Length: 173
Image (tube, rainbow, N blue to C red; front, side, top):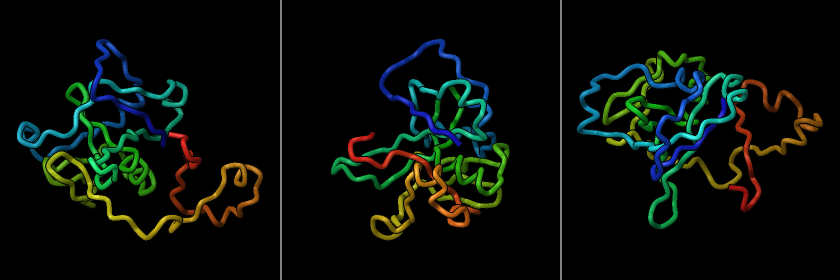
């Protein structure tokens, strides 16, 4: 699963998205007309990964977050609209991949939830999930990518788990 960014402020007319990204869109909606009453966040431009990376990924999702006025992150958008299609966040793409739920089983209950097969994740009317932080910092195990590559981390530590790889250094955003 690989992430990408979107922008809400600029426009790129004629940009062609990789097929791999188009294959990740939400395909099921309980009431598409409800988007006029409950529109999700909207992207004006998507910055997809390199085509080779995109085509090698099992899924893709956007990595953008919304920061509140007090600089806290309390909500995670699970849906972004772009050119009449609706794309999932990296969290949705990763969870669906981990649960072996195909893109055709991802759905939107407009204004109230995102669905993964029979599972429902409640959202606000814009398709954002309230973040329920689980414990304090470092509640989950952290491993250095170099330690994994150098086999300093036993494989049983990672087996059967959803592993996120990203930057952890201060100022790396």
